Length: 67
Image (cartoon, rainbow, N blue to C red):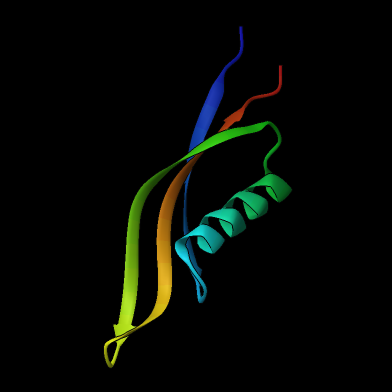
């Protein structure tokens, strides 16, 4: 039997949603062992003068706990 845990991350990118997600997964993988998946819960953009200035995501990262 394995047990997993979920943690929530908020990430901002100056490039895209995809970059924000990839950055969040890469950062989580530095700290957490056994990262097995992620769920994108929220997406949001910041706008200035009609132009998108940043992309933000909230993800829930799943990782398997060590035995």
